[in-house]
Image 1 (cartoon, rainbow, N blue to C red):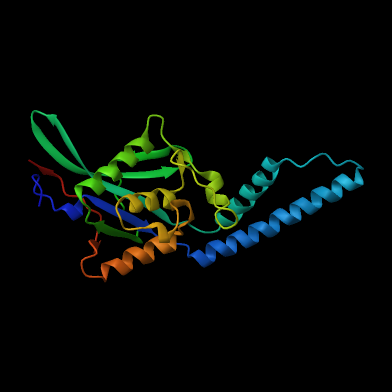
Image 2 (image 1 turned 90 degrees about the horizontal axis):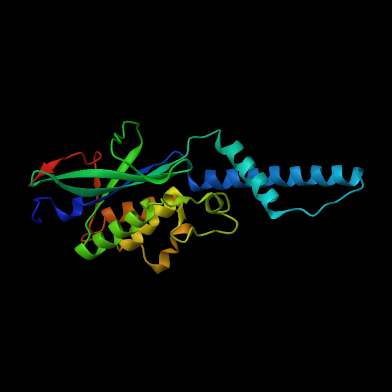
Length: 233
């Protein structure tokens, strides 16, 4: 226990909600690739008929890929991942209040906090991770940098190109599992052998965390619900 009376393993929690397996995601990418190829072939046929062929800009191909993936993803609900960290608020008359804050990333806001996140939808799993003071400092430093200002943006190219040529956001942008994997690297749960954050699949993160709950001394524990305790000291 630390001075606040909160167990060290309760300072960092990873929230994971699965509705798509890696195999389903790969299937979506294959379907999307077929759509892109069909659209490119139709465009080439139209250009041949018009007897003109301007150079194809790479951004056009990316736009086609994004449109195709969004079409197929729209048929499913996608998994989500969040980081939950313990925060201290000492601004209330010398009384320190400890509370849990959710950090996530989306296309509209980039990396942002969700202070009122309730996790009411079914399917969420929560993994509490015991971290040292040094590891927790690395995690909070990364999250503070990611939240800005300005906040890190959403790594759209990294998401849509994940299974063909992974693109790192280099700390300036993230997709949800990339942010979680980066935090798990900082926390010592993932290592170099697991790959860079932008190459680790959501399923792999879930499997690694689950396996560690079954390993004595790993410091990872599955929770029955999201941490909601508010303590003062």
